[in-house]
Length: 79
Image (tube, rainbow, N blue to C red; front, side, top):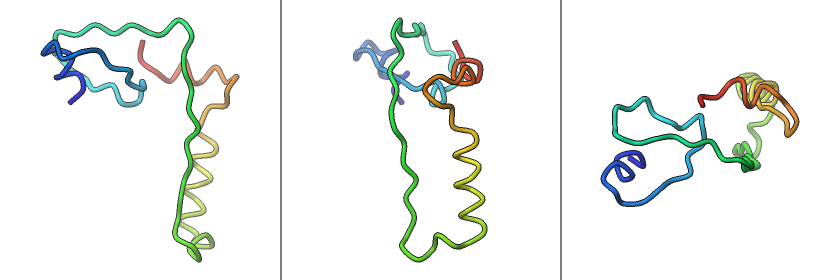
């Protein structure tokens, strides 16, 4: 959606690497000189934190999420 708006000349967009679609739209990608970061939270309903599946997903998210000084953040993305 964002790339379609940019391709139509409606402006520019900051898009996380993970959200970049494979597109043939006539847009160009420009990595930021000073990348921005954000904090992401996982939220679950009260009383469900002891469910094995939920615990497993939260552990995976913690393990896979790059830290602020983690080179995996750059290596995992698309330039």
